[in-house]
Length: 101
Image (tube, rainbow, N blue to C red; front, side, top):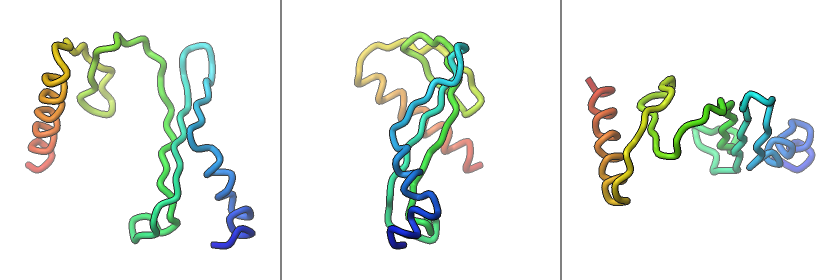
C-alpha cells in the first residue's frame, strides 16, 4: 500500500491513534486504542494489529483479577511477585484445560 492509498483509506489516521486513551464521561468510561503495523499474514491481511476497547472505570482495589471477559473482577491477595506469577500461570492452565474439553 502506498502513502496515497494509506491516506485515502484512513490507515494513517488509525495508526496515529495508537496509545490514545480518551475519557468518555464522568462515570469512568474510557476508550483505549492500540494500533501497530505488523507483517501481512492470512490472519492479518491488512498488516495491522489493533485493539480498540471500551473500559468501565469501576473502582477496583489494585490487587484484583478477572476470570473471564464478563467477570467484574475479584480480589487477589498479593503475597510475593513469585506467587503472583505462579498464580497467573495456574489460572492460564485452568482456563486452557477448560476450553480444550
